Every structure is written in structure tokens, then in C-alpha cells.
Length: 475
View 1 (cartoon, rainbow, N blue to C red):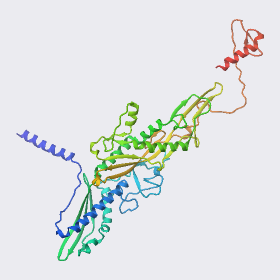
View 2 (view 1 turned 60 degrees about the horizontal axis):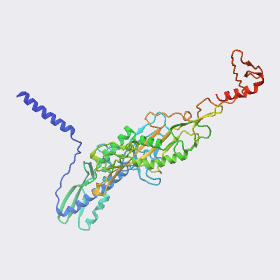
View 3 (view 1 turned 90 degrees about the vertical axis):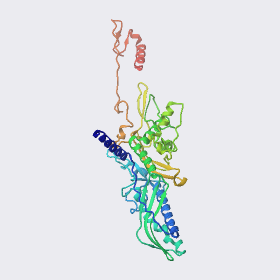
View 4 (view 1 turned 180 degrees about the vertical axis):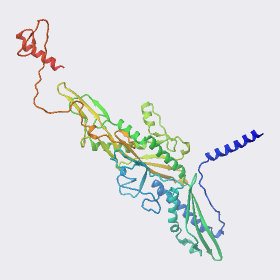
């Protein structure tokens, strides 16, 4: 019996502990249902509508700005940003040159593009909950600052004989719940009309945006880029696929031609323009497995299928089936670009032998590239079918034809171009070379001491000279 009791107690403890660990985080929601006279319901509904409209307004700003309600007002957002018109030297990206809309990087190289060995990467992703500058806290401060303005002193009700007086300060509590965002505004008000009096302290709104799921998918997309560098791998595949020893293509990372004479060359500025076009055309091919807009196409060619599948980001979570994700690069976002060329002209390293009419053209080009990619995570069913979009940027960084590591140290440009495959070219005075061919065949040949060519008869010296000259030329 004692053993049985112990087994039962152990089972109960085990079940309780496992249930508690598996239970997801559930934010605490405290709502007090107030009872007020029916005649004051219009005022309460009016304030509830303000909480709802401000919640939507703030969430849209947060969605456009990657989790931040403001970049200028430190009372709303306490995170510091350095933002410039150059997107690869900034903490955030201006959507357009003259636009005020800017969106932060959730993963990027914080160091300058020309950093060497001490390159640092960072993230401007805000927390969703709990911390002082989380998305919840920013939205709370935003609604606090706008709530009175929205109420407009209850002017529509003053004309109807209502008297509304403030009895306390505004305190907003935002909770990102499992399926929506709850906005609870504590604002004590004393209301009178004729002989009736009442007090209202809380106003509530539920905004139908699944921000928790959107934030979770955005975080997974970011973490997969940090771990697997899929942006860089995708672009490196493009550079290989569209390169070759052809002026109409990109300079190859590695190629060699046994050719004597003129070589294929490129203009560095033209190469940059072609790469910008490739980014704009092929970055949108990236898609996230298991999302609303995910669709896997099938090809007859195994090579095509492998290349296509390399654009799929393997989240593989069915819980994101109602959320879509899209990737965009726009050609007016300046990318950082460098190529190991001698000035503006990009040429191979050449080695030519004029004696043997033999030449080698060695094409070795090292690409350095940094580029911003906009990620749009959308809930098309949010806000009762109106849809909701959350934006953030990721930055791809390639150096020396590889995804850039944190401890990256670039190779010297001089070692990658304009180097000879043979000896360095030198200039000297005239050099005389004598080639002697002595044949010994048991007295059948005599050595001609004047011309130093082997001949059987002295009268055939010219014939032997031509014969030997042909042999030497054929070496």
C-alpha cells in the first residue's frame, strides 16, 4: 500500500510539473467589469472607440517601422538610432530618398563597410513584452499621449447636457494576447447629467491583430538568416549562374582560358548595375515554408529543382499557415559594391609566351557586396479582413565571394588582380643566346667550327642550318 501511494503521489507530481513546463506564456489580463447607468453607456462606448482607434493607429505605425512607434520622440521610444541615407551604413533604411518612413534592421553589420577583422553585427529587434522599451510598452506610451486628444473633451456630449470631469490620470495597459491585442485604459471620470451621477474608470478595446504570431515568424526568419545566411547564399548562386567570360555576363569568380591575344573585360559600374537588377528580380523568389503564400513548384530538371528549392526558407511550422512573408529589394536602395578591378576596367591576369605562342587568361574576381532586404510579414485576415503588415530589414553581406563572417579579414586587392602566372616582366639590354647541338656518330659527322652546326659535308652547311633552325623553333 505504501509503495502504491508513493507511485500515485509521484505520478501526480510528474503530471503537474510537465503540464506547467509545457504551458505557454500567457500574459496577465485584469479587467474590471463596471456597472454604470444605461444612460452613460454612450460616453463609455465613445471612449472605448478611442482606445480601439488609437490601438489600430499605433499598431500600424509599429508595423511600418519594424516594432518602433517613433524614432524622434524619446518619450515614446528609448532606443538610440543612427540613420543615414546610405542603407548599408545605417541602423535603419529610408523607404525612399524624400520619404520620412524608415524601418530598422533586425540583423545587419553595424561596422562600416570597409571594416577589417573587427566587424560587428547587431540587431535592432525590440522585445515584444515585459521590457521597458518593448512593443507593448511603446504602444502604451503612445496611447497615453493621444487619448485625451481623441476624446476631444467629450464635446459631442456636452451639448446633450453631460458633464464630464477628470478624476485621475491616464494609465494604459497593452497586452499582446494569443489572438489579438488588448488595450485597457484606466482613466477615472466623473459623469453627471441632471440628477444622475456615475464614475467610470476603465475603457477596453480588443484589436484583432495576431501580433504574437507575426512577431514569432519574424523572429524565426531573422534567426535563420543569422544561422544559415540564406540571403548571401541565394545571391552567390545568382552571381555564379549569371557569370562567364562574356561581356554580357558578370565577371566569373574563377575561370581560365588558354588563349593568346585580346581578353574579355568589363566596366565596373556596369557590373554593379547588373547586380542591382539581379537583386531586384530574384530576391522576391525567396519564400517561407508553411506560410500563407508558400507554393512549391516542381521542375523536370533536377538542377532547376535544386536551385529553386534553395530559395525556400525551411520554417516548416503549420501554425503560420494564415500568415504570409515576402522579400523585396528595390533598385533605388544603394548597395555597397566592390570588385578587384584595376580602376574602372575589370580584366583577367594574363601570361603570354611569345617564343612558343602560348597564352593563359586567368579570370579571378572577388565580389564584395552589402544589400538591404525588406521583409514583409502579413496577416491578411487581421482587422476584420483589412489585413495587417509588419516590416523589418535584413542585411546581406558578402566579402571575397563568401558570406561575411564576424571575424572577417579581407584579402589585399593587389594579390587578387593584375598578377602574372609566370615570372614578373623585366627590362634589360639585348641578350644573345647560342644553341649548340653536337652529334657524335662514330666519325660519320664532322664538326663545323665556323657555323657550329653538325653536317656530314662542308658543302651542305646552309641545308643543316635550316634544318636545325626548324628543330629549335619547334621546342
